[in-house]
Image (tube, rainbow, N blue to C red; front, top):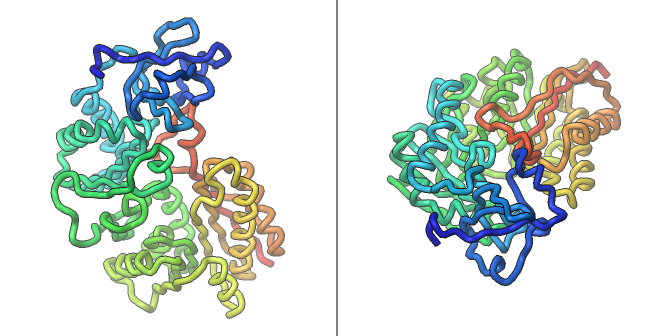
Length: 403
């Protein structure tokens, strides 16, 4: 199907066309007229979205196999999605990041918020890792990659196909090199004065989580001369930032041995040895219980777990898990007082629900606290105003009062 002969899909009469006109980026299957023709469309097909009166509204990407059956690609129904179209979107995204950061290490494309639905691109200097998490992006991947190289000048582009989003779109899980060669060693990334080792080949997601940069900077301000515990540390996100902030000692806890090895290599690159940095591998809850049993306490405790509430169906169980984390973390804060940073990357858990779960956990640990900071993802992860899912990250930092 060419750009000049596109199929059309139509909203049901009951669908709220105003929401789409005002910027909503998704159209769910139950809001569309579906017949044999629409169900037969290949995933990723570009089509014209019409309202119930057949007035053209936007250019969309269709995936009949997904609950999100249509994603808004362009508000112009006649837009041509070609190399130049991708280049314009990428250049617009790059202009923001170039203004924000003095080195090319950031999230370059944050999906719908940057006008490329379902696409995530993280940049690591001369390399970029792309997650094409929607069928339309997979279908246009060659064009997207060519535009990416032209706009940014990167020499290596890797495809990361891991993750739940691709499976929901009916896509494969084959990660591979698209341009250049696979890095033969972790890529050092400097943020907030700390050095992180990003494994672009075998690490989680794209190799490093850029979204916590601003929250790590705030925690760093609390870290001078502090004994710090970083739980669910991955490659040492908060712990290494605390070291750069003058922490007297940092302990990183994670279930992944490769992630902890990268954290230790980051500390070594910063000139920090065993006297100031340690790792403990194990289940986070079991390890926090063991630390308490050992009588250990910390001036600053950070807990940045995976998404305990990835969907509305998992929300209540997820909130109980966040409460449990808060309780365990608060019990490890020094009796004379300290700080507790708690994070959630669950879009289904609103800030209010997450914060309340944290407060219940702190209270059940027998501690009282003040909220001193509330954070979200950094500005290289912009929010789409009509898409709550783009505001997934929350960080609430407490000053825990003396017991």
